[in-house]
Length: 238
Ligand SMILES: [Zn+2]
Image 1 (cartoon, rainbow, N blue to C red):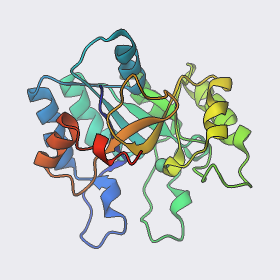
Image 2 (tube, rainbow, N blue to C red):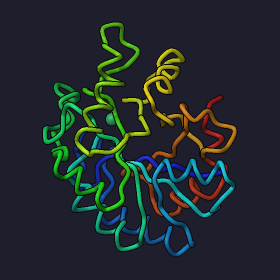
Image 3 (cartoon, rainbow, N blue to C red):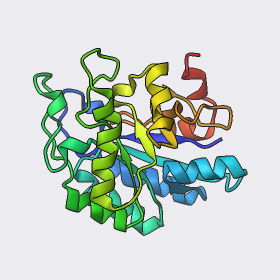
């Protein structure tokens, strides 16, 4: 069993911030990574985690995922990951590189800078896996969505940016259905992550991997409980 942690933005925000929970403070993040290190865990990418699950390899792995590709990853997460020799997977919104979280416009959620193509290439050069998080961050089950553009053209855009294959997808808002999940292997993806809660195991469909949300309110003791016990598995709701 491998926990796949789900992060978004690593940033200190005010008490009155709307959707404050998608941010984790830099201090909390540092402490969480230190706890992993002290417990003998290694942070890895989703693709590394799946390989280890398949081979029954290293049991002390925790996959680290960062949705949306916020630029604060570079300053607030990457240095800590490098310091401990950890990897991670960042899920990029392919048509919004260097832009901001436009999909949140009108919701009251604050605007946050997304990484540029150069910054994404820099992360990749540091051993961070780049995954695809669609082209524009829509709700994929909406009838008006062009699935080929969101799932395949986006993948090609990122592959051109990196000069390397993209293997993993992350459903925006965790929203998908069977027909969408079935397209992913046809488009050349080898895995996808959801917002279903729980630790990933060999029993999971690799296109419907569960994750463990880490947010502003996740205190250190809860972080450890989420990681080391069946706490999240019981919240899966299946
Ligand atoms: Zn997202």
